[in-house]
Each structure stands twice: as C-alpha cells, then as structure tokens.
Image (cartoon, rainbow, N blue to C red):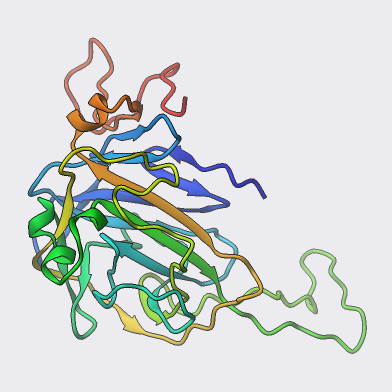
Length: 287
C-alpha cells in the first residue's frame, strides 16, 4: 500500500486510516461537532491545523470498513489522552478501540479520559504554559502536536479439514476477519507510539521548526461520553500506521510560508454566506 499521506476534507489519511480535528460547539451534556479547522502544509510536507485559544475540539478517528476492530494510541502534547501519561511504546499502553463509525460523530473523542466510562475533560486550545502537559511536568516544546497510531486486532486464523466453497452467497465460507465486537469508542489494549515518533512541537519529521510560542491543549470542563471496557489484542505482525497533525495560529503558519490546502469555511462567490459548505467544482484543496 502507498505511504502517501493526504488530506480529504479536513482530515489526514494514510492506508485507509485517518483522523481529524472537529470543533465541539455543543454543551457538556450534548456535544456537537463540525469541521471548522483549516489545514496548512509547510514547506517540508508537514500538515498543520489552525487553532484559536479557548476553542474546544474533538478528535475524530477513521478506520477501514473491513469488519475488524482497530486499537489506537493517541497523544496530545506528548500525553496519552487515555491515561494523561507519556506513552512508553509498549504493547501494554492503553488506547481506544474503534469499529467503523455507524453515524457522524460516533468515533469522536472530545477530551481527556476521566475515571469511569461516562465522561472526559474537554480538549481546549490554550497557551502552552496553561496546557495540561506543561502543568503536569512536560516542557512547552512538547506542545502543539497530536499523534495517532492505529493497530490491527489479532484474529485467530480459520482452518479447514477440506477446501471450502467460496462461491458467492453460499455457506461454508467463514471470514477470517473479526466480528467487530461492539461499536464506537471502547477502551482496550493498544501499543504505544514507539521511540521513533517525535511528539515535540519543534521536531522535524515534516513539522518544520517552531520559532513562535505555539499552542497547547488545556484541561476543560467535563463532557459526556458513553464508553465501555473491552479486551483488545494487537496483531504485532502487522505494522501500525502513524499519523501526525500539528496546531498553530493561522498568522504563524502564513508567516512561516505554509500553504493552505483545505478551508472548510470557503463560501461560493455570489452565494449567501453559509459557513462549512463544500468548495465549488474546480477548487483544489489537495494541491
């Protein structure tokens, strides 16, 4: 498969996996999400989203629709959104488990995991010194980065005493894919980001060098999120997929020579001002 990383709408994709930042404009008991973040590409190919201090956001996870579950490890400012700790990169790291979304917003995590299965603390964009990571001992250089690593679930192979009949529509052809036990966001066992992934805001790996103060993620109000606990065994024979987005204020990205590649607020010329519409035909957000 190709290792090309691209944006589709305001999302970053690779090999069928992806994630996006979506604005949480609802209430703590009824969160609502919409795409309102612009995407820029820096001269080295790294992808950035624009941020505004005080804006709440969620992370939407996209996984292939192959009838399987997928484990994830996600860090914000270098901290696991599940445990709030730095990820060590072992198979014991705890992450979220997803199946393909059954409805819009089904696979959105809007904050830091709280004890129990019913709430998280909202992700809120903040100055680095007020970010959760810095307040718990990290340096400001680690802020402004969101990294996600996806893992396939281990599935016991199916064996046959005789060759099965695989003609379409007939019985006797069980799938070797998992049954997708449960849907949506479930807690499970994942594998960490690993030592080869840098989550520092000033790192290279396509992210450029930060010369400005940057942006971090704070610890906001409690937001309702119903989850459950499940068992997940990662398939370590299959390589994981790692995706990274960085956050900065738009004027910093423009000053740094970054190119706008997606604008969800684009309005068709001559039409009534309606934010969050699709660009017109001929507008290329992927250049």
